[in-house]
Length: 189
Image (cartoon, rainbow, N blue to C red; front, side):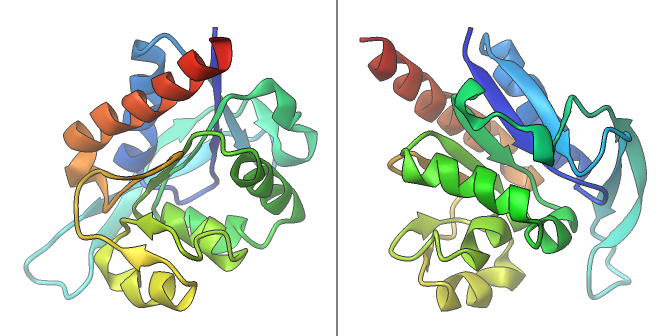
């Protein structure tokens, strides 16, 4: 059975995290959640309020962790998922997060980026010359990292699949599973 690694931390957006978490399982994959420690991750819910210039945030569910970043054996995984929210801002400074992310890019394994998730590979220079979607306010950051930002719900660039955020989940979920399945099918052929 193929296995995905979901790389996250506290303040990951709940829908950005839980939709791909369940979607890959629905598609016949196992998925392990990885964070800094084995403590449950505190997810957050972002809502758009007409009385606020930015999204508003409240605590969401807790997500159990299967493996801390430092103990991730990257060879066990066939794909990587990095959800959005505020977690990408701080997880990207961890050396193990970098090690894990660079492994998937170096081997052209499937990578799914949701919303702010693109901040993780961008800071390592891994999006240079790549097409990606992202949460619109971070478009300049992605362009400064050398990426071409596409304003679409399901951007596929080879092994990389991305979206702008949780409202894109129906289109993104289909595209993600196509990219993931194609990779596993070609590896077993």
